[in-house]
Length: 236
Length: 236
Image (cartoon, rainbow over all chains, first blue to last red; front, side, top):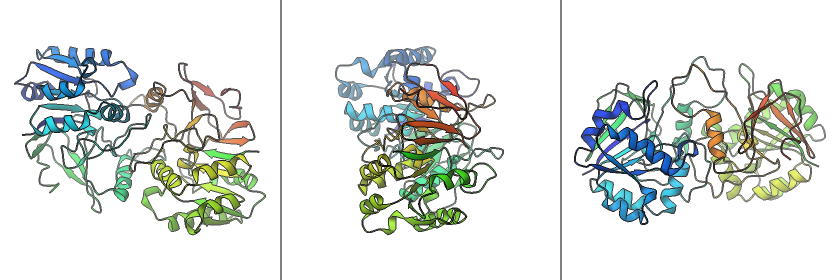
């Protein structure tokens, strides 16, 4: 019953907010006029109202009404009754902290398993994985747990970046970081480049967008998965 | 009584492990022949033995013996009796997790306040701050707390990187991340570029190395602090 778009980023270089996803979103949300927006990740610290407004403007061209989860007295009820959900990007620690504190992590998981169409971008995609342990974000708040929705059978690393061969910087590359993750965890990781997204329908997971993705499994060499191919097999 | 070197990185581009710090380390550890090494951060997942061996080789030219904290049955006693301490870089989450689980965070704080010479590089510098909330590392394990030593009155962001004006990547710049930190926290942050270190003696904190550092205070514009200047004033 699952029906999700798990996108690396909301915005690609020289594009505007969500525009590269327009067609895909029209299809995902074809059966609803109203989308519940989860603004908890607060990119750049903006308010929930400001963030909801931003999402609202982007969905105008699809004739969808956006309502912010923060505007409901009972967020669990709002999640349960939603006919479409979008979690925007920002800081994954802030997002996961708020989801746990408002006790909506489990209800959100349930409605996604029951088929409520879901869009995640960046931090909103990170939480689709088994844990948030492959986020790129700074740990600016301490959430009660790193456990996330687990609606896909691996973790996502959004905004995946290839190593820059000309860099003189000594900080870890993204690939090194994910390899370090695998010294402590056995969950596979999909490095999603900006412009890529996963289209999840039931147990089918297909890589969309023009880029390949990088797939990391504990103890194995990372592999490139080409655009339009299925990831369901890889994770079995 | 405090006596520390808080370094952005262990290794600068085209250099070898710790070599750019040789003179500074000879001075810091002038009164001890043996240095207790904390290998918990496990860069790239290497074993405590391997990491201790690496530190050992680097300190050979200074005629210092390195002993790994993991080789002691009673790590608290080892910390209390050490005449010099070095915490190497790696993953800050792994490091902080191990420090808390082995209950050495508080003893380490006490001996540093009492004057035991201390060297931190990268993750080993992150823990000198009030919290580890400005680390660049991936949250590959869930530590019991983000609180760290607080032996300097601000947080450190090691491997500080200026925004790349030519980048087409949409992930957050380091400056954006630190600004997001300040939407949730009021602790000042020093962005230390690779090749820079802080020389802490009692309440004096001086920026060493050839680069300036970037100083971030909540609600204020970031400022550049020139090499060789004091940071003690800034944080009052």
